[in-house]
Figure 1: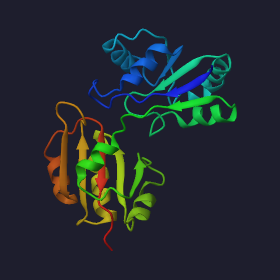
Figure 2: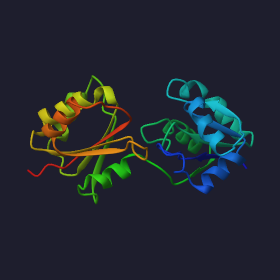
Figure 3: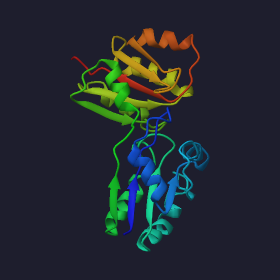
Length: 224
């Protein structure tokens, strides 16, 4: 039976994968990978020998019909990204939507997603939160910060190391200098770090320390 299986992969530590996910990656006919080189490291670690097919944000529109045809032909295909759960700030939405249109079965495995451990580590309220992912780099960025200024729920952003300070300074400018934040990086890895405090104190810390790794920024909601 044809099926698309969404398979979360570790966000850092290779041990953070489920037994079921390993079984699926061994059994499917094809694995769609955001970066075949990075996925090969995971597969080699678990002695998984399977075919990899590049599927990422730069080719997903072009390759979509090819993959749908493979599924219609009766193949079971797994979708993975470099780290975490496909579809969460990574490719996944487009192919899932197309499978639904074509009445192709979809199965999503539970697994890692970076913002959950970062949110819990922050110590901020978790019963309600607003996930923003990566904000636009240019157009619409300032507008979105202004819209979030009165957001009462805990706010979650993803950010890259080279844009972290820019984002922190914009959070200070548009959400307020007294806002409490938590910045987690290198989650599940040897040098995992979470820095908590007033926004300007955190800015000062990262102005004087090396910034490496993928980053999750958690901002406490507005109290006004």
